[in-house]
Amino acid sequence: MILEHAPLQVKPGHSSEFEQAFAQAKDIIAAMPGFRRLTLSRCLERPDGYLLLVEWDSLEAHTEGFRGSAEYREWRRLLHHFYDPFPTVEHYAEIERA
Image (cartoon, rainbow, N blue to C red; front, side, top):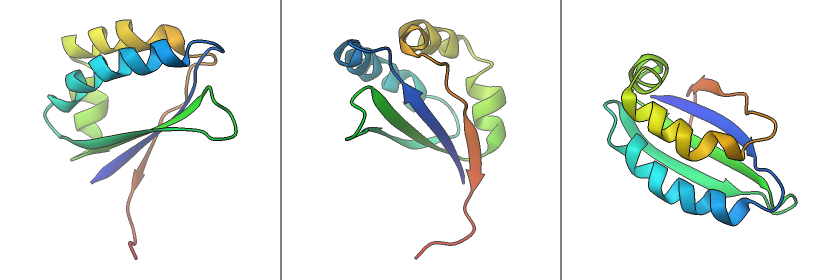
């Protein structure tokens, strides 16, 4: 399992619109091969800050499968204009769980 970690900074004043768009976009990613689950959390200290965590079967399921798909273009259309700055996405492999 691979964990995608994406801290999202939404443009001030656009959080409500972002959350509505994300409600649509989550169905896109959830239908992709290799997708396991996601969580979107809102920062308590910075109301325009979010953390997106997505679990994938493999790194390639995200980087090649999803990002290389027509569905990703729709995801990008729905969400990418909300970010400032554009997020840095990192991937993690679990080594221990308590």
